[in-house]
Amino acid sequence: MKIDRQRLERSIADLGRIGETKNGGLTRLALSDEDRRARDLMVEWMRAAGLRVTVDRMGNIFGERAGAEPLPPVMMGSHVDSVPTGGKYDGQLGVLCALEAIRSLNDHGIRTRHPVTLAIFTNEEGARFQPAMIASGVMAGKIALEDAYNARDRDGIRLLDELERIGYLGPEPCAPRPLRAYLELHIEQGPFLEEEGRSVGVVEGIVAIAWSRVTIHGTQDHAGPTPMRTRHDALVAAAEIVLGVRRMARDIVGGDMVATVGHLAVSPNITNAIPGRVTLSIDVRDPLDATLDRALLMIERVVEDACTREGVRGEVEHYWRVPCTPFDAAVVDTIERAAQACGARHRRIRSGAGHDAQYMATLGPAGMIFVPSRGGRSHCEEEFTPIDDIEDGANTLFLAALEFARGK
Ligand code: HGY
Ligand code: MN
Ligand code: MN
View 1: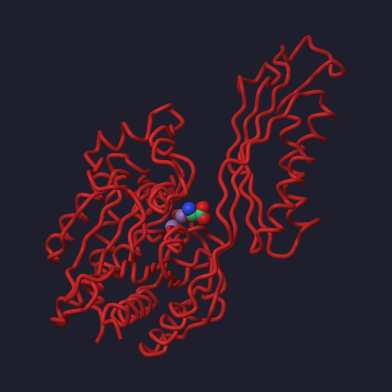
View 2 (view 1 turned 180 degrees about the horizontal axis):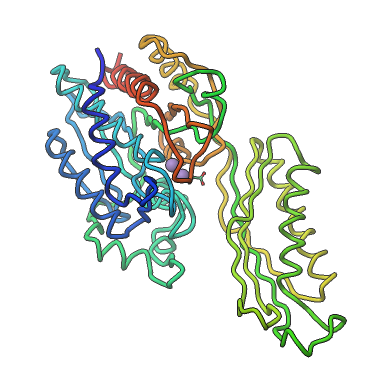
């Protein structure tokens, strides 16, 4: 039994047009009008596939295919929001392969013991509202609903108000629910599967992730008359922090640690004023929680030393942390057998990217299926995965979900 490759390819193209950029990428920020249009199309497709669609208080969308017995569902999910000038595969592919698996259950007239549910999680990327995976985090009971509601984007707009504005503030509680299994197909967003000519990654777990916010208070002043010896330049301290974070991750801790300063805001951000205030983001990830804990302490030292040298004041806020998440061995084995059964060239792999599966793994046995990213690229308009590999991944997802839903 296989999925319908042409139908899946059409769905990828059709959904990918909503928020498409002129270079063929995707800008579909969470709770934007593009996100609403993508959600509306997915709800239309879910209903056409006979699913009972519900929306919870974080705007997570669930499409349930009834099972023969009132058992915990097999859930397949991901997200449809993107980063700015991102790609058409991150998140979207997982949602569409899950829909295709359900459409294929319908085609084959298969009645499963367990219900099968398709889930679309709000604001997985954390590009507009922080932190990332905020809605699966609320559902897992790891993020308070009120905190999520009060998250604001860079224009000061509240998450709750945007949920209401696009019509996806649903009535269902956003709370833990029993799961037979949670499966998420996702692009690898790294180079390993393509380098080895493999079409499927059997994901064994996800690294630990920490997001911090650094605020540097210097002395805003005139760029002309202020002598160099009297300056307290917030951006100079920030520059030393950026380089210190890179050195910490690459040269001091090393191993598989990665660290990124992706966002930096300067005030007043004009040519002829010495920056008085800078905020910057730090994203640090490592396979081990203990190593990540050590790195956060080293970051505090980097900030302290840079600020002392420049005579400015630094504040560090570690505001988001997800522990390293090993997936359920039985789910990993089932995915591996499914990949084998559909003839996919596969290997086990670890995820360096965070996913909603990280929170879903706290609610029930979870696992992920990766498909390759061309050139290992993602969170960019060049993001791409060949349909042959997508077909292998979707068939693997279909067979794994079927095994759990049949309740052998
Ligand atoms: O940050 C991540 O790893 C994911 O893309 N949200
Ligand atoms: Mn993603
Ligand atoms: Mn992403």
